[in-house]
Amino acid sequence: MKVTRLLTSTLLALGLIAGVLASPKMQVVFNKTYPASKDSDLAKVKCNVCHVKGKELNVYGKDLQKALQEKKTKDLTAEILKSIEKLDSDKDGVSNGDEIKAGALPGDPKSKPAETKPAE
Ligand SMILES: [Ca+2]
Image 1 (spheres, rainbow, N blue to C red):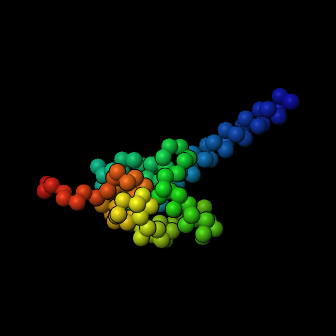
Image 2 (image 1 turned 120 degrees about the horizontal axis):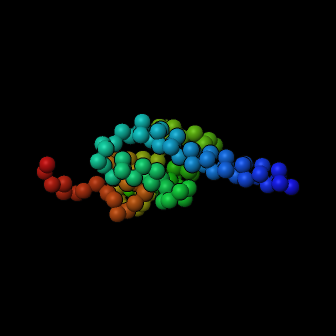
């Protein structure tokens, strides 16, 4: 009885660790595909490009998940990322690709490329 409980909690813990590790792996692919400058919104939010909090996905994350499911894979690739560039996941009028290139967040309608960027 005790052993079973220990085994269950160990498996649960391992499952949780695996769940947490899945995201950084995807983030590596994302960062390789879209190198963002360090002070952009995109670089600052890290996991929250696709996630709201923890494992919960935002609208962009959900579109990405859909693309992964269509390809029947869990391995994110640059090709899959690029396949949803033309979508406007957060419906703010700017495509995911354009938002990402500008360092804005494709899953947050409050974040989009500044229309009139002040001269630096
Ligand atoms: Ca958008």
